[in-house]
Image (tube, rainbow, N blue to C red; front, side, top):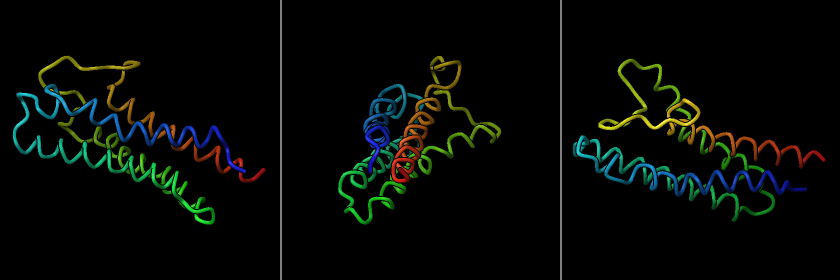
Amino acid sequence: MRSRWGRYLLLCSAAGMTVAPWLADWNRRHTFGPGYGPHARWHGTAEVVGVSASGLVMLWLLTRAVRHDRRLATGMAALLPLLRYGAFNLTLAVPGTSPDEEGGPPIRLLGLPASLVTQDALIALALGGYLLERHAERL
């Protein structure tokens, strides 16, 4: 038995990973901002494309997995947001790093950096969806 809510949460996380980087980073405030040199743009472009590709792989795993590999595909799909975004939380422990963009006021949600809130929400959606899927399998 499959959990409709679990699958929905996983698909929302995958869609968010596919689209959010283009909305958040592919603009003049971030990747193409005046304070970003060529190497920073290179990293920004790689990050946008890499996260979107991870989201597309996640969508593929969730929609194209054959029945006998569905459990593995669902687990791998749920792991992708954690692998892509989990490290951003660890960067806060590195001296001299900041999640805030240069040249503008910090964007906050719930008092926290908006980028981390968004990324952690995509991780939570995926892990919550995975747990609902696993629970439905046991029923």
